Image 1 (cartoon, rainbow, N blue to C red):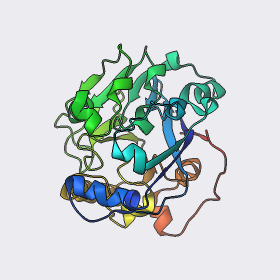
Image 2: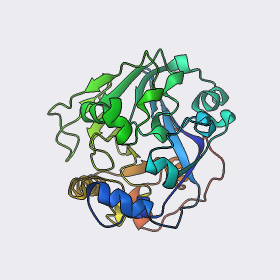
Image 3: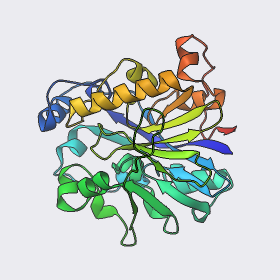
Length: 296
């Protein structure tokens, strides 16, 4: 198998978004939006697993359409105050796949960690793929309720009809429920609520190593190790429970932890650098370019 890190532009958010703030629900989001400091531009990463049973894409990255007038809702405070997106047409997921020798039609499954625009902006490229989304996520993202919650469901194509995951009582280590995608049993989708209620992550299992595709569970590996709840979750207690589960998992299983906005994720993938390695101060040289590949 091969795993590819694919960058589709960059995003800036208020520093309180990855690093956390006070409050619950919409008050927590308000405190984040009122922060006057911005992060540095962060990568918007998607992931491709070249799997014997069919190619798997995890998230679709962002679209360059976000720079078109009217694409982002002017009435929504988050898009006016909380985010800056930088995506050129040449950075969209279909172009990045082509550079690696793939077409959108080559993707069998698209697993969505969640449906925020920086993860779902490119979904319209994959009409022939099977999308896999959690039930809570699609319910919270759809319709008028979804638009209030910051999702851009009005931009989903008419053909978009994802497969809904209802997790089974199949343990993945200490995660007691999961959905096993492949016949080989090596790709598990697990519920990781917090950033959104329906957020899910993907674990690729090998004999002595696992790859944990974390979406926005945290914005960096260090924030996971710091047990940091982000500044946009509506339920900090739920988010802390997920962080605790994840920390238990990585203590039991050698894990390469791959959040979608961590500038170090691509280098960790390239080096197969587990969190245990990190704690032992075994580091890799940073890689400045994107679309790194690793053969597993």
